[in-house]
Image (cartoon, rainbow, N blue to C red; front, side):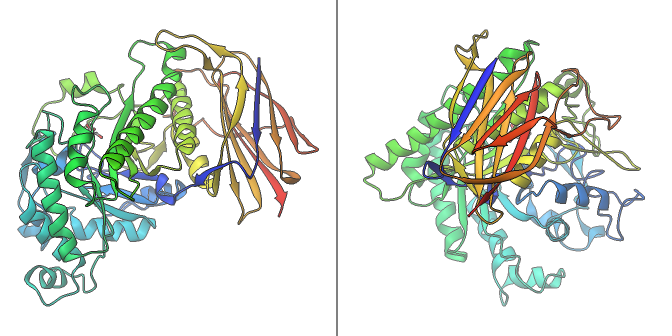
Length: 496
Ligand code: AHR
């Protein structure tokens, strides 16, 4: 099998936004309680924040963390989560049919973002609530002081405003599972009015309006058109969500779903640009893919989980090696859309469909942790247009799928070109990258992630990124072999 990639610094997609490597923490299952916060764990600091989790989040180089949901936000009263802990109410969380104690809330989350070096991406409740709660929340968070809500923040221990920059206008409002689900017209009007009021409090915020929750929704496309008709001038991003599964246990069809992912993103870009044209607008709307991942292993277990527990085991997918390959190919797809996708949140971060899992004593890292960590760490700089040729295959749902998925990012600060390449085939592949227009110096590092059974999970922590020993770089051409079913990274030093 053969795969060839050609890149050139004059052929650029866009600068990769740091926010492409973001995530989501929802009050769901054990994400917050036992995940971020667990006063009973030996890993917790004096405030109950788990330091082993903090370290792993730092290792992932996460930028934004969307919070507090997800579906949870559509039934959430944010005021419940501030003030003295012993006075915070315990509530029913109707989204996940759990008990919410509010012992971890807004101030605790802000402390956690400081510890992890992340930034908040705060969602407001446009399900059970609306404009009033949103305007009060942003006044509480971002207004310096001298008003009821900002002074309450100070009284609760935060003298300085939180200055939260990025805000989501609700969550998946197109879905009938959502508390306060709305038609596109109802949501569009509400989002417009909420955006207006939030900007009156703080004009410097970035706003994300909710797009379709999946490509399969009957309203997909028309939802975006109607919502953007109402909000195009008010918002900075349109959100989209995408999860994939391998329920049918068909590896090649599963990995080919990156084709669907690519078409999904291109389709939403087209809808945004159609609205732009219709409105004769100068503004180009960018995308916030504020939930993406593999999600299906836990469905059956979730159906059997008894309701009304605190921190139940929900959505605890144990990811296997083929899931890591799927996440790898999704990351490459995201880089290919770096011109329009500026925010992308791996959903989620801890315990709930997550790269990081906790036990009372410690953490374990899932298979998907590794490709995400590498792209998040080294996929910084300028995404270069990949010119790729490769052998292809047909799967159940897709035709002419390349066995190779590859992408390169030029990092001028580090003087290096980083190549990510995935071999989706079960045979080794001769792989060549031609670095046109670069003054190539040497190969800085080469790694591979491969050799595991596709169904192997990582509870025993044996998975690791390995060195890739047989790589030749001569006259601006990198030549190597990609192992069957492998995720690879090559860092090539260039002279400026
Ligand atoms: O991430 C889990 C759930 O998936 C979120 O709460 C919701 O927004 C989506 O349907």
